[in-house]
Length: 374
Image 1 (cartoon, helix red, strand yellow):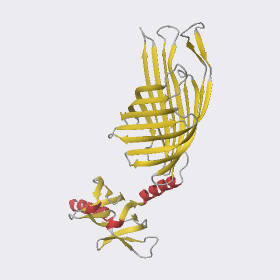
Image 2 (cartoon, rainbow, N blue to C red):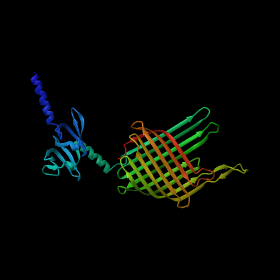
Image 3 (cartoon, helix red, strand yellow):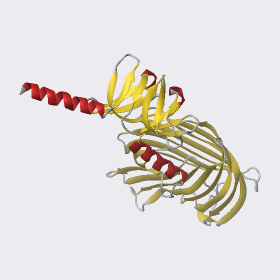
Image 4 (tube, rainbow, N blue to C red):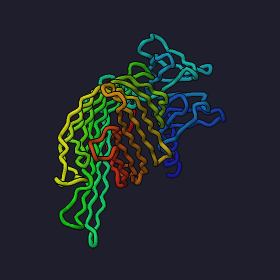
């Protein structure tokens, strides 16, 4: 009985080994399993007994596959078929483009995939080559809230949202920021902040470093009596740094700016009357725009983004405005972060009696969605 059981075990072991891919290493070891994928640096082998095993590519001296394996060479050539090893080279039998077995030098191989992995890779490549508009979106939603009740009655609320669709060829960004604050400690309730900034920007890469962009931006600010600022423009930019963890862009161009300010009253220092009425005004201008944008990962969980845009007025020489935004976010989980944001909006030509800039500092939660940058 024992001999029968032992015979069955040996038979099953031999059958499993025979149906598995074999990997031979420099140190004489042989590993059995199913080849999943490799990138010319490591090879992933799925084993029934050891699970997923990552093998250094340099340590491999032989591959014997039982099924079809897809190999991509540095020159873009694809080979598919059973793989064996002869004279230090991997030989692919039954490659579709070749009538006979094709040898491939180990150092010329940049990708190894089984049929399932190759199918998934090809589908992803097709999505990249012909992406639908709904593909590749990612975004974030920031919010902050503070309230006081009792001896003081105040409320402060900030909200920001951004959605980005980015491919190797282009990038589309939709964004919006809103702040509202009031003080009702002493009736009547006084609004101390009410401003909205929203816009759209599209970037198109014309080379690995050079890109063109177009933008539109809309702003309102109750305390500055800005009914609406509309900005339309475009220009060129350059990717100074473009890596997986850090990007630094510089850009410049031309914009059209239309500012509409509402009428308001100011206390008259020499009454009567008690108040002077400042009439509404509309100013349309051509502007230049120059700026930079920086985005980097400070650590595995923390990231920093910063953007500065300077708009010298071409129609009214000497006037200018600038926008500055920076944000630091630290992940709490895969979709939740804690963020700190600072924004500054400055114009050199504020309405009479009003200040030139509005500064915002807020902190709160960030919710992220979608996949990361490609």
